[in-house]
Amino acid sequence: MDILNFMMIGLGLAMDAAAVSMCKGLAVGKVKLNHCLIAGAYFGIFQGVMPAIGYALGRTFSTLIDQYAYWVSFALLVLVGANMLRESFGEEEEECACQTCSFAPRVMLPLAVATSIDAMVTGVSFLDKPLPELLVAVTLIAVITFVISAVAVWMGSKVGDKYGTAAERAGGIILILIGVKILLEGLGVL
Image (tube, rainbow, N blue to C red; front, side):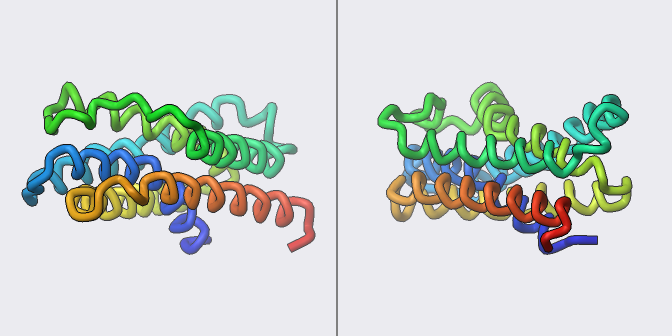
């Protein structure tokens, strides 16, 4: 079981949620514990559930991609990571409801879904993992995202959105590096 790899994937996937959480912290100004817990719960749950959905969808089509699983993993992780990097260098601000101070479900649910789409795609990269390892992976991803998002809300209220772009860039780079590692392992180089 590759727990360190799962943790690194969790860190990479959590960066979008961290950036949005920091924005929420900045918007709310005076952060309360429940703000941190709400953001952590929404983002953590969705980041944990979406890879399982991607895994299930990938399993349905596994006979088509078993021979090329490491190539698929590499391609998906690099695409998601590159997209995160591209977005971090874009001039337009991400469209989100974090300009308001609301932590209501009508605001948090779309944010959680939007930041976890890449986690669903990443779930396909777990096709070579048995179910117990998938459960460990999604649990680690959910817990890591919960903690990072909760802390990011607090940090956002303290230091503003200064580090949101850097967090997204770090997440993109981590995902690309993990994709390269998976490809090199699949090719027998590592």
